[in-house]
Each structure stands twice: as C-alpha cells, then as structure tokens.
Length: 501
Image (cartoon, rainbow, N blue to C red; front, side, top):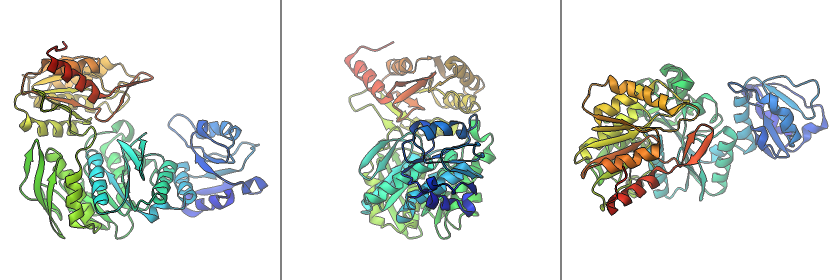
C-alpha cells in the first residue's frame, strides 16, 4: 500500500496533525507496520509509541537505518529526516487506524466476539470457540493461553496483542476461511487502544475484581477501561453482561442491546438446579430462545457463570441450540484452569489453576472445598512488579479456606521474592482463621514437591497462580517452568513410594 494512501486513514478521528507528503519518498510502498525499532524490516512504516519512560521517537533513527519508509509520531520531526514524518495527536490511536486500513478491515468480514473481565475470560473464550466450531463456523482464538489463527497454533505473547498484530492475525483468519474470532480483551488493551478500529459483533463482561491496580491506580479507572468495549459496540451488537457482578447494572446502560446473565439475580439467561461433581456440570439454562441443556466436563460454580456467558452470547448471535449443547459437551477442559493433574492411580488430588487475584483464589478454594475428601493444601505466590495491594488479600483468603498454605514465588521479576512472601503473610496473620498450617518456601519447584509429599490420602493440593504458563521470570531471567510436569513428576515419585521432603 502506498504511504500517501495509508496516511489518509489518519484523517479526522485518526488524529492526523501534519504529514510530509512533498517528497517523492511519500509514494513509497509500505509493506508492513512496526512499533519496535529492533524489529523493523525494509519497507515498514514505523509507529513511535510514547511509553511510561521512553519515547519511540528516540528510536526513529534506528528504525530508518533498518529500512523504515516513514515515521508516525506524536512529536515533531527533527530538522532533517530521511523519510516522511507524520505527526499525530495519539500514536496508539493512529497505529490502530493504520493497522485496520493496511489489512483492509478484516474484522468486518468475521463475527468477532470480545470478552473482558477480571476472571473467566479464557474459559468463556474456549467455550465460545467450541460452540462456533460445533456450528460449522471455523473460528480463530486470541487469548492468554494461545492464539489459533486458522489451523495454526501461535504462542501467546500477551492476552491481547498490539493493534498491528491483532489486525494481521484477523486478516490471516479471514484468508484461511474463519467466519468468527473469539478474543479476550484485557483492560490494558482497551486503555492502550489495541482493539480500536475492530468491529465487534458482541461484547462480553464476566466480572470486575481487584487486579492491575499497579497500572490503573484505582477501581474506577480499571472499570472505565473495561467499559470501553461496550462503548465501542455498533448499534444492535449485543452486550453480554453478568448482572451478578456489582458493575453489571451500569454496563446495561452503556450497551445498546444488553443481554444479561446471572446465577443469583434475575436475568435474561439463568440456570436451573445445578449438579456439581468431579465429573463436571449438569444443568439447564433458560434463555429468551428456549432451554439449553448443559453437560460439561468443566468443574465448579465459577464455570457455571462462564457457561452462562457463552450460552447468552451464542443465543444472542443466533447460533443453533444443538451446536451450543454440542460445543459445551465437547470441550474437555482449558489449560491451567482447574486442570486436574492427578489420576485415578493417585491417592491425592492435584489441581493446577491460574487464579492470581484474591477473588479468583476464593472461587478456586470454594470450588475445591466440597470436592476434597480431607484437607485442602494451597500453594501460591504473587507476581513481582505488579499490584502489591492484592498480596495480603490473597494471603487472607488462602488461610481462611485452606488447611495448609505454602506461600512461595510466582514470577518475582525484579522484586525480592522473600519480601513478596512477607507481604502475603501479613494478610495471613490478620485472617479470621488461625488454625491453618502455614509454610514459606521461596523455591516454587520445591514448594510443589513439598505439598505433594506431605499430602495425606484424600487431600487435595491446589497449585495456584501460574496455570498454563511454561516459564518463570526471576530477575531478568525467564527460565523453563512447567507446573503440570513438575507435579506429575512428584506424583510419580509418590506412587513409587519415595516421597520428597
């Protein structure tokens, strides 16, 4: 695409202020978009983003040296520049507009469903993906665990990628025959305009609980970011809203076509009597279109809410009831979401779960408690360089609802893991329940082995926080760390009679 034509996408709401079009260079052919100067290839248009500490404009010279044919920036060009320099009010907004134009607005050729909320996004996305596939609609998936682009599985770098990556994968999905895409939309992505210029056929709100306050600073700002998804919906596009959450009612006034779901409150989509067992969930769902019979391998009450979200969305999009029921039944599980690691050969249960907020940990423990034959042993930590306010809250929840708590590391990053553990334990000291046993083991590998070693027959061990992740970040190092494999190895040794202490 010619640079001059691409620049036209920045007119009006795109935020274009000035653009150098005088040189013949402005007729250069743009072959890609880049926002990291280190990854610029010849023919790319470089978008210089403004970060918290650095300005992308400082790296424009490097981008040009690598072959960039133009620069888009919020700052004026230097006195001399080798390529056209476009000045915009908001580089992120501009990047989204450029990406959508460059890839020819692929979201308009698919049914794109955006899911936002603190907890439940990944499971709801997997459920909807399974329903689309059961309906004969090839579907893409963008989320925390993985990206499915047609038949290609791509490692997920973040829950919601930057706008050029989102639009590029949308285009690949369309070109590979996808009629739908289900995507998790994080609060960071909404605040940073990564999904601007995307046409959403539906938006889903799962819940809002404390998280990411290191970035958003307060719950109102966090909610405002989530609300943007519903402000972006086109007239008539359904907004699927969990009214069990205290913020749900406010969102029903934002979405032009709200569709509500809930377990505890009156809603458009509600469940009948629930059957919750180790084998899964069975219940009926009442919808405006009739009853949906749910038979799912997913476990626990939180997944009832996730299933309601998926059913509400699918019915609002007029997918066949038979496909909804088939998709729910076919989904065997979601990586790192109440993932059962132990088998019938083991005398204890071991579950891996991504719960990394106090609310998610509470949901996990309340799901696990009635399923445990005897004690609940919880292993968890909190990430470094992230919201510190949730650390004592998670400690308090763990000690109230567990019999044994092993506080360990998550991804400490640049923080001292011992200090993180001490902040978690402050909540344990002030918890209502004082008879839970508490251990501190900084090494997470050792903590997992210890939990499985001390477990007695009938105990349930919960490994919370990392879920599907395959690495651990300690300082500046990212080391291989597969919690499922570590637990499986410890269980094998337990079965062999050689417990690790």
